[in-house]
Length: 474
Figure 1: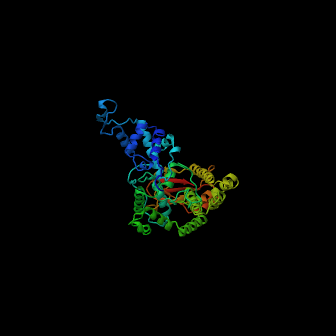
Figure 2: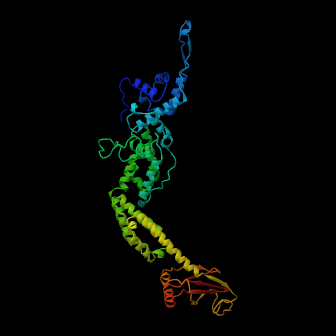
Figure 3: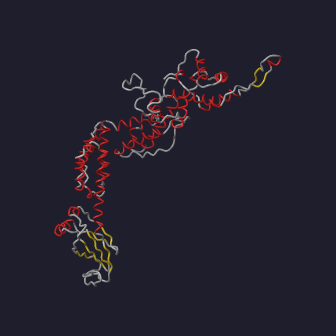
């Protein structure tokens, strides 16, 4: 974008802007212009400190001037005391400088006839949240892990985009403006499908990212800052092969585009779609039998597959997601909850609410099983003697018994709180630590199933060693 063009008499127009919009006295506006601030283009390269210096000079320009007036002393030389520039007037001038500077940076025309003091104050009040001034980009540390595996590409690039969004460049714009997709402005003829949403829209930060110019000293510094970030997590790893060509020029934008082109190109998209589709077909949840695959992990992986497909143009409707979720759940305890979902049209069209409902149902079933098992609580009894056969509580055992544990099963009927047969079928082998430090493993499922089927009651197992007798009920 060329510099702000001004018609002849621009200095007069600028003086009107000073006296009208900025509320400067005519003498102060003249003093400011006498220091070289004649056009809008003179403001865009100034800093806030420069404007403060100009006001100080207007108040105390130094040198000697004629006293003036009448009489013989009219031509006498005296110290030039300058003009009065109040604090609010100086602040208005600083706000005007910042407003012009920002409009130049986002490539918008500055129309003094349509600028109000309120608009300038709004931008001024948000300057600390959006931008900073200087000649160097933000050099704070970046928490981006080295890109070593191809499976981590998407996560790494998403982290990179987040870092660029939150780091400010030399001119104050977020570094994400360097890597934006289109360099041309929305109103450009080369982008007929995009329209300019207006000044400060949709947000001030998004406007900076979409419109900050890709030229000048600030862009050069910001482009190199992006290169330093990319170099930090690719150097020495396979990804370096795809960005090393830009190491000499330190072109961060080109390195970013090449990285995305290689890892997120057509071949990567095809692989992502294939992997996500396969995961949806092969993933299932079977309840307690999956010790290291909880329902939360299952839902997370399922949602990731849907997200990968959505990012690559393969969208699933809410009902399709719910059907896939229900088909992948093979836990017998969840059958009733699945039937409730199928009968609820609202849940069938809301994937997130369905997951929440199933989590509540699963938690309720789990609590019921826990309460049932607690009724048949383990009893720990200590007695005298007995290390071998016949070593029940209070007895004196004989024969074998040293160095091994002998398990003696006793069947006892439990009137209330008996464990259901289908629950016993899902019991997994668990280790119980005895008081003497040894471990006793449960009987095989097949034997438990036979005993439970025959007696239809819970099975209390008495494990004896030494003087310790432990009774466990299932």
